[in-house]
Image 1 (cartoon, rainbow, N blue to C red):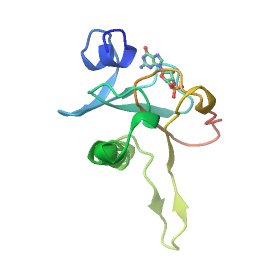
Image 2 (image 1 turned 45 degrees about the horizontal axis):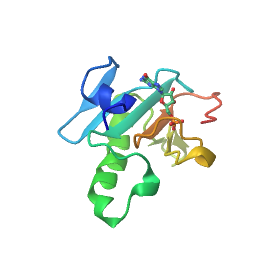
Image 3 (image 1 turned 90 degrees about the horizontal axis):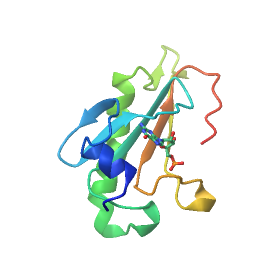
Image 4 (image 1 turned 135 degrees about the vertical axis):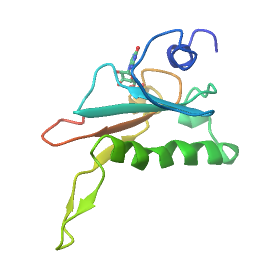
Amino acid sequence: MTDCLFCKIAAKQIPSSIVYEDEELLAFKDIHPAAPVHLLVIPKVHVATLSECNETHGALLGKLLALAPKLAKEHGCEVTYDAGGKPAGGYKTLINSGPDGGQEVYHLHLHMIGGPRPWTGQR
Ligand code: 5GP
């Protein structure tokens, strides 16, 4: 799609704070962060919405989701456990789909939202 904001970000036609890139994926900081850590992970290929995906997108969706724990470690919001097994840290992963799902940008993206609370996390 020629007029897609995130395609333009993936093509570096629009600047963004990129935190990860490989052949298939790009991750960058959300321009209006809802929390101390708010990253967006996108496929470089244009997929408008999760609602268009099926089993043929399984590998791509798997890679998209599997990037979250790596980014979480790099941005200090991975889940850790103390000696008693009590968890700390953590983050929210979220894909908004369509108007009723709160999607504003029609290029598939995974929100990775975390950091020390309190934060609203209302996306
Ligand atoms: P959605 O509501 O579609 O799930 O989320 C779109 C997200 O993209 C929002 O959190 C919004 O802040 C972010 N966003 C919109 N435009 C830009 C932009 O130009 N650059 C960056 N980095 N993020 C953007």
